[in-house]
Length: 202
Image 1 (cartoon, rainbow, N blue to C red):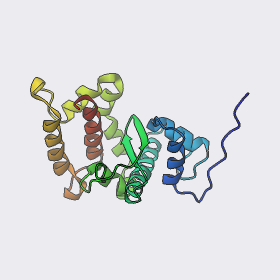
Image 2: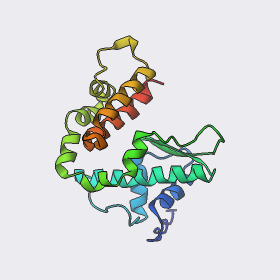
Image 3: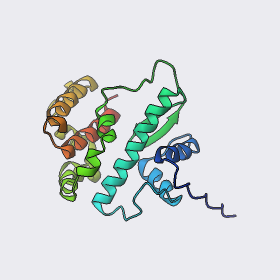
């Protein structure tokens, strides 16, 4: 027997609360794409209901979701109500553990997504440039090599570890941060590369 469709979200419900409702129903977590699909299926009014094949629509949908997720993570931690794991391939609600999962105040990803200027100021041309080279290689199955090349670490071989990658990440964020005149699209590529490399160098 077919399951009855879930009711639409109330239009006044915040996107963070809508995501929390779906994540509570998925204890193993959800990938970003599936979470977006579920939000759209329940007619969330906070996301564009346009084709994700449009690159700017895809960027804005991604940005709005991650803005909501980082706001939700902050709130859950402050309320001691849980910890939200935010990774590109798995967004998962975990139990709160006192003293071990505090929200870092120097998290560049958090800073990026909580700054709505990046949503307003990113143009279709910016998104096109963002998707060139690095992102093209990443989606072609060469994500690790693409990320290492972006960090200019692809020649370090066996000497490479997570501590070195983090050091290089901090250098690049400092160099390309928009507050210092850098490019928001370049910063987003750097942030995504760090998420990729964290999966390979634990």
